[in-house]
Amino acid sequence: MVLSDRFPAAFGDLAERLLTHLPEGDAAHDRGHVLRVWSLCRTIAEGEGRMPDRALLAAALLHDLVALPKDHPDRKRASTLSAEAARPILAAEGLSGSEINEASHAIAAHSYSAGIEPLTDAARILRDADRIEALGAIGIARTFAVSGSLGRPLWDAGDPFAAARPLDDGAFGLDHFEVKLLGLADAMLTETGRRIARARTEVMRGFLDDLRAELEPK
Image 1 (cartoon, rainbow, N blue to C red):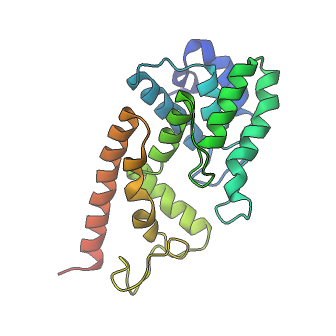
Image 2 (cartoon, one colour; image 1 turned 135 degrees about the vertical axis):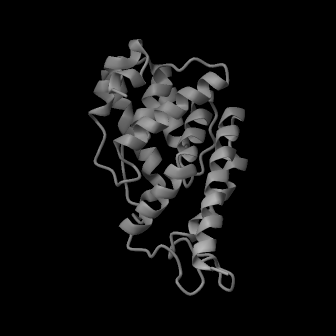
Image 3 (cartoon, rainbow, N blue to C red; image 1 turned 90 degrees about the horizontal axis):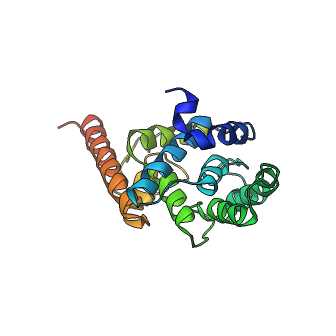
């Protein structure tokens, strides 16, 4: 798929310009991630009976405008920093004050760790889309990519599935599935997002079953 096919014709030029502002993220927060989040935003919006607009486009493309590593001391502020950094960019692009406010709030509220309540449709859609990106086959790849970038082992070699130890996803990549990822579907804010998330969660459960069979052969 060429880039222009990802955006409604009315948004194509704006999208191209917004994408030039993206920083170099890690393997899990790169340009591909941003484009997949936008695609999910479109799918969710249309599933909820809403036409994607410029505010949602801007929020999706700039939600990781300030990219901080998972272990950075300001990581919890990354979404609010991104929201602040997006404002002058969107003003320069001619978005209205209400569009900028809507996009900025959606960016600030999308983060799992920021703890900001999403108050608009755009914010709820973006949050669901970004969390869905952590699920399914892509989510499996992203989980281990981030874990590797932080120097963490894939799993505890002596107790991969934490049968006799506390879960610790700060130490082992595999623990992140139980600590966070498998519960995300229940936290979706839209029906469309919940449906997609549940299907992708089943993909992850299948992977975990296969991994257990390989690590613990009978």
